[in-house]
Each structure stands twice: as C-alpha cells, then as structure tokens.
Image 1: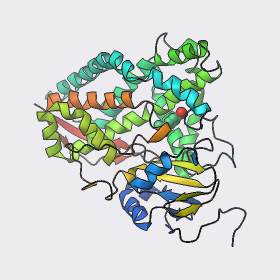
Image 2 (image 1 turned 45 degrees about the vertical axis):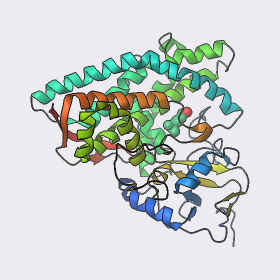
Image 3 (image 1 turned 90 degrees about the horizontal axis):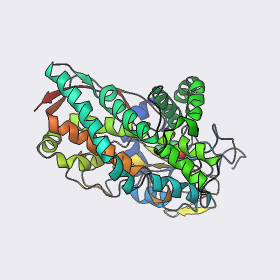
Length: 408
Ligand code: 4IA
C-alpha cells in the first residue's frame, strides 16, 4: 500500500528498474532510452520515485503544458516543495508565469535576432582567428584536442565577451556549469565531486554578476538597464546575469564538442560539409538532435494530470528525456543516423514551449560559425585516439576528443 515517503504508483504505469544517472548509463544512454520508449509513453522509475517519458509526443506534451507541469518546484530531481534549492532559484528557469514572463521578456529582448545581427561579425572574426591558428598547427602536423582547443575556447571567448566579463578567471564558468548541471540530478558521486570545487567558484560568479564588473553595453549591463527602466527590480538584475553565466557556456561548449564528434565519426557527412560550408547550420542542428548536450529536464505536476491515459498524481516529478525523444523512431526515420541533409525541426534539444532556450539564436550562431570555419579550411577530420567522456548528470559531454585536421 502507500507510504508517506514514496509517491503512489498509479495502476498500470510500466515500471523501469534503472538508474538513469548511473555512470554506465550516462556513458552510453541510448540503450536505456530505447528501453524507456519501449516501456510505454510514461514509466515509473522506482529508484527515485519518479515518472519518466522518452517518446517525442509525450516529451513535447509535458514541455508545452506549463500549467500542469510546473518549473517553480525545480527542473531537477529535487522537489523544492519538499527541500530547499541548493542555490537561490533561477528567476527564469525555476519559475512559472507570471514571474517567469517578466524575466523572459528581458532576456529574450537582449538575446534577440537583432542582437545576432550586431554580434555576428565579431563572432565570425573570432571563429576565423581560431581556425587560422589551428590551420597553422595542422600544417606543422600537430594533432589537437577538439574539446580543449575548439569546443571550450571559442564559447569561452565570444559569449563572456558579449556578456561583458573581463578575460581573467573564465575557467570558473566551466566549473560552475559542471556543478549546476550535475545538481539537476541525484546526490550521487558526480554531484559530490562537482560540489567540492564549487565554493570559491560560486563566490567568483556572484561577484561577476555585479554591474561594476560588467562592460557598459554588454548583455549583462543591458539587464541592469532593464532594472533602471523598472522592468525588473535592482535585486533581480544580478540573478539574471547569473542565468547568462549558468546557461550560456557549458551548453554551447558541449553542443560544439558533440557536433565535432558527430563529424569525426561520419566522414561522408564531413565531406559534404567541406564541399558546401553553407550546410554548417544544418549540420549543427542535426548534432543537437543526435547528441543533445542537455539530455534531460524534470517538471513537477501541479495537480493530478493525465499523461497518455495514465493519471499522474499531484506534486510528482516527471523526467522528460529530451535526448530519447530526439531518437524516437515514431518521430524520425533512421533516428540513430547523423544526416546533415535532414531538417530536424521539432527536436527537443533546446526544449520547447515557454521555457524553450532563450539563448538559442546565439547558441546556433556559435555552432554555425565554428563548423563553417572548420569546413572551409580542412578537407577531412580524423579521430586519432579514443575520445573520453566527462560524465555529468544532465550534460552529454566529452572530456577529450583527439583529432587530426587535414588542411584542404
Ligand atoms: C539559469 C537548462 C539550462 C541551459 C539552464 C541552466 C541554468 C539556467 C537556465 C537554463 O540559471 O537560469
């Protein structure tokens, strides 16, 4: 029968006896994703007392129903109705309308398509400068690490520059991101190890959310301008800068790293991209679908809600496996294939609905420019060693990607 601690399991919901956050599952999640989709439109995971969904239709439904599936109780495993958040809640991610709407309005104006027109030239020059340098190294016959030397350096340069951060100390952003994305999962070893490193880093992050640390005119300063205009309060401004620093780096680092990995494993796709670098945007988009940097997100039910005919009780945690939806055979033909001629519209890698990635125009710009700069200079890219993984409760992340870039 029911207990006080475990949520009630509604009759008929298939049970999936697996730990989605175990090392071996995180290392190779796709067999688990297939089991989750096969189990049914929604499944119960006893280890954590949560529901999980991995089919495209239901993931989409959950993410597009923000009244029944709320974010203010946290978008990780922790239920903020029952335990305090590990850091003050994000004003945009961990919020529902109407509070969410105010924050979202400010951030979406700062990260608008108009902004992209303004930053595009600088972002392009930075990509060209990086790949000119990599071309010189390749001509000397040097192998490179695609993670350290491409996927990390580029976003760590262009995005904090645009936010208006000083150059020193940016490596803190990666440590902070690693912790935040682990903290959406359970309190396992991964989180414990990330949390060890984080105290001085959190202090650094919060200090750099202050207006005096932000270049006038940058994205960060524009948040303070919105506070000056009365759209948000002065206390909310540093918290929204924190959202830039939380969500804007690790995501694009791993998005770009995973795209490089897709291309390194698929020489025919790379050859097509090299022949026509205008495919860069599509190639990046398809890698978002196939190797989604943000693999999962939780929602919390606001009331009893019917999902695919099953009643999910109020205040239950529902795991939306974005990466499983992105390989659902009900939605995609040959879902496990990296096909840069596919138009993967409707993938869930950037979320969907009112919480869909607010920085997506900037994220896509970075991905496109990196792949285009690469494709223009190099005829082939070759894996010259086993890539290693950096396990994280939420992110699909490589630690190293040994590559040889062969000049055109
Ligand atoms: C925030 C989902 C992920 C990209 C994300 C992480 C942190 C925040 C927003 C989004 O701190 O607001």
